[in-house]
Length: 432
Image (cartoon, rainbow, N blue to C red; front, side):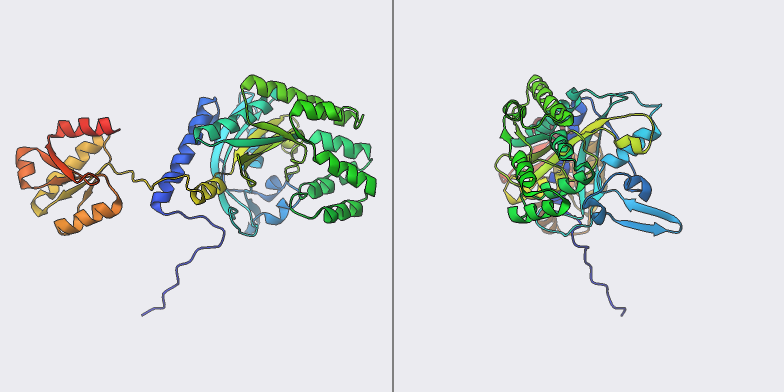
């Protein structure tokens, strides 16, 4: 006998059991419903992109995580998010699209980071973005943040959305005459919650900031609370034009969020976002009492500029649905496992044909019926139905076929009744 290969799965790649997949698919359906209700259109893009396209403007630690390989003469990468492929798509089809272009996309992305609790190498993202032509109002930023809140409201979850504007820190860095080091500085600031303060200070000094400048920029990131209050407190902190523009945009964003009725937003200048393409508004979302981000987004003013001479600014949001599902499962969000089958049909040797016909008619009338057609005993089939967790079993014996009345057993209540086909349809319609 040939030696069998041990079945095993790559670490960090996701796989669910069917009952879990049902719950996960239900989450995706709810999010898609919110996107559609808010006038976003669907889009799908390839998992693989040319490397020069996908790496056009990533930067930071992201480059180290990208799966990159060649096939023949083709240098390609697996997408690490859905935003850069969107920019490529918009640039390719700019003369065919209506602007502002509002799209949503749900798909898998890939990052070669170290697998750990709630973090995977293959995971889903649920994105919604708005792309403008030439200009894009800050109303779009507010709409994406509002949409993020609505997604979690649809799931019955409370979130805390922490918002900043990268122009504020960028303006201060420019004031320090360190704009050429901005990317390196942002990378350090993005790690403030993960590394000791003295390590962050040392890294910033190594980049070229003196001790006072390090202290001031770290202090700047500690501004949290109501957006209007942050703006008021920082008006005299720095007179740099970019800094002041960031404060103005931050204040305008707060006004638009109020119009959208968004309730769960708090300002936090410590929100940086790791991707280099963010240029203005940035935000991260957390479950109400959680520390792990379950989604994020921001403004990317110049992303499409790497693919087109036409200025197409954009803003977007993303729900980290894979991590969210993991957190919800661990915290008992799903009270019980679900089964999508309404009724299992049990037949006998002489009634299999009638049972299959009945299953077909029930399905045509919207009932999710499944016939247990394997050559097993009645007892074995009842045991199988119970194992599957179905609520109802429909018994189709010779008497049932002859009288056209079928025995329906409620597996939870251990009660049964005889019903004609029309009564079955009515019963399942009521049970919805």
